[in-house]
Length: 192
Ligand code: NI
Image 1: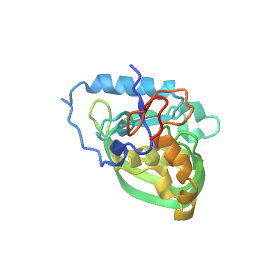
Image 2 (image 1 turned 90 degrees about the vertical axis):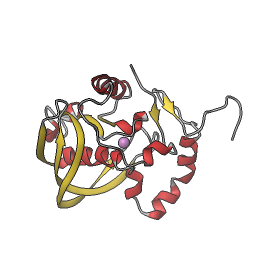
Image 3 (image 1 turned 45 degrees about the horizontal axis):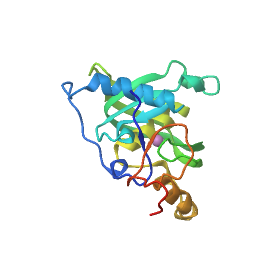
């Protein structure tokens, strides 16, 4: 099942998500649906808050980009209750997009290396260090579980310049090939 994706302005994107336990209701189905939703919308990562579930879970499949970023080779993982324990390396800038911020792409500065502790889909504890684009994607998705969006890393000026685009997104006035969940129901033919 493909979930609708919550877009900018939806309050679930601003909540700090809660940890889950192995007996979380319907967990394997949620993970399966998140993969389906991510592939349907051509994303390389998706966090549970983006599908209106405020839980500490995200999925990443970076393999479509492995030709450009070798560090993403075979990078397909489920992250549960993740915690970034170390951010090291130089700050590097690269453009990012987000399924919750359709039409927006901006340069974002992030540390080039991180160490993260998480549980895999079988709730086995894992501690790994990622660098390069893998570190970027993980930080982006991890941010979602903390209620942070990539535009929060932009300068106040840059953010102000995006204001009208952001308002449009929150009203659902975007042309995307996946179903979205706006903060308020969109009333056909009526402007709020
Ligand atoms: Ni995102």
